[in-house]
Length: 389
Image (cartoon, rainbow, N blue to C red):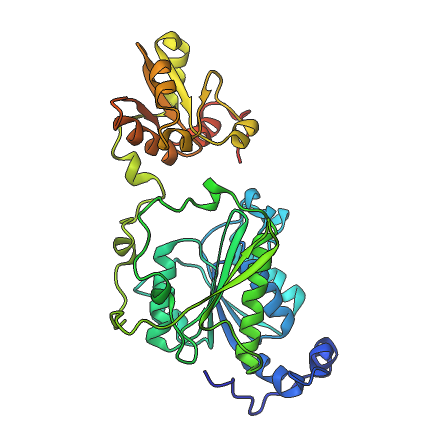
């Protein structure tokens, strides 16, 4: 992309003082700072990645920031989504983000898009911005952002995180590859756990989000070498970085329109785990409560979460056997012995992993019933003293 047009753009005395550390950098200087002021960036998502992205782009002096999000702040967000604060729990994330951005840089124009990004609205929302930053956490939206960027000719500054690992690159910039060159097809639904199920160390999105912000500043000011054509991989446990080369695939089908990305990714509008849950018998937590009170001796309740989760909260009487031990076959006979002569009920945090466990057990002739909503529903509907996480 061409640097933003700075014709008529001036810095006020306050802005000169505010951005003085940029102005004395030969690589940025007055012209570079004017480019930042003239620029516009759309951030899709105000979660772990969007938080540091927006904070640093605002602090850098980007003149117009757009935010797409329809979620509200939850207490569990605050471990990593540093743009939000405790006083904003229960309120829209985009409002929380705007408040913090204007605290950092009152000269920034903040535009809010309180909606889910869809094939129907993506091109209209994204059209007026110079750079698009992808701070999403699901495959349908990543493909949507990518394809819309290709159709509009916009750079796509990409990042993703999981547990202790993250990656970042720049797609669709100066003839470089796009997301479909890295992932021509999405992974099977449920193969990659969400952060809510798999967890994420709180500082990781800060590192990746700041890398995304750095790339955005470089693109807007026209300095340095971007990550276009390079996928940067970060391992927080090893504190190591490595790179993979990316190239456009000449055999890749052309992107000429936006499609149904839920269908493309095989999720058909369902939440994570719903597809598996629909394939097994299920009961509600209220029904489980009645069974435990009236006929506990006739059943066994299996908890397939990970041990650290069980340390946070448990349903009384549940036996812990993590999902990975069932899927690997290691615990099949153990479950078979537990369930002998009894009805097997299985739960996890929200119902997705327990459904997977039951599907795996069925392959070995072991039948059971899923607990819809898992321990989260138990805490909400049965026993509020059970901690939510």
